[in-house]
Length: 115
Image 1 (cartoon, rainbow, N blue to C red):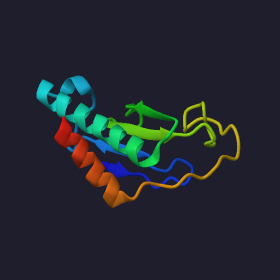
Image 2: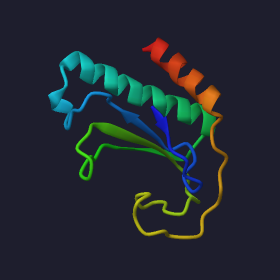
Image 3: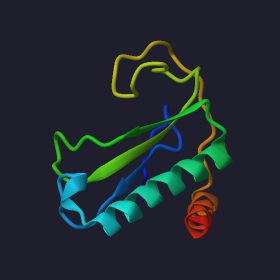
């Protein structure tokens, strides 16, 4: 998991599969389950830490054909809501506190242990 430093979207994370794989169906079923469990654990940890209004999940790889998921906490008053974070800004937006990286990592580990 990689935390992305984004002042307008604090808590934005990428869950990256370390081996070069372009699509989910390129993974073995057990690896797919593991990757999805990490994505879900990241979502659960962000929800518990940041209390966003919504979480967006996205897997594109159009520019970089390497399997990764974006896990994006969203707030109704963020710059782009309800549009995608890569779209046109809708307003100036309100800053929200980012998660503590150590606490976030611990929360992700705890969520994975529950899986």
